[in-house]
Image 1 (cartoon, rainbow, N blue to C red):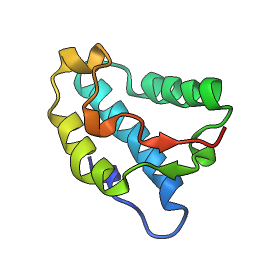
Image 2 (image 1 turned 30 degrees about the vertical axis):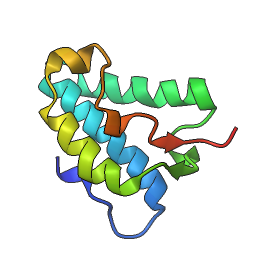
Image 3 (image 1 turned 45 degrees about the vertical axis):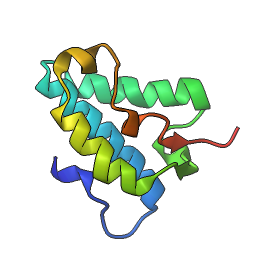
Image 4 (image 1 turned 120 degrees about the horizontal axis):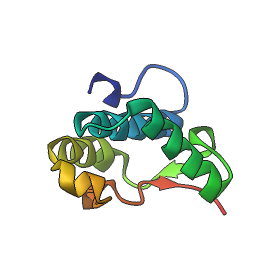
Amino acid sequence: MSSLFLGCGGDPVVQACRDVVDALADKAEACGGDREAYEAAFEQSLRDTYGVGCDGVDAVRDLDGLYGLCFPRLEGQSCGDFVAGDYPLACREQLLFDP
């Protein structure tokens, strides 16, 4: 998952959201899912819920925890838990949007 590290330049919050999308899509693909469909569905769920995609994320709850805990735990998570939507606690509610 080389895309999990912040790139140079740009907004680190937006990049973190894109890295979340990449990490979830990587896991979906590893579990036999369609990567592109998962990416599109996640972005659409953000738009449906918050009215914006990754470009509209206002903050990350715990940036260090996202990269240091969430992504490694997600990578090691069983496909059964992932498919059931039972994501690691370190991954939950990381992306914050202003109402």
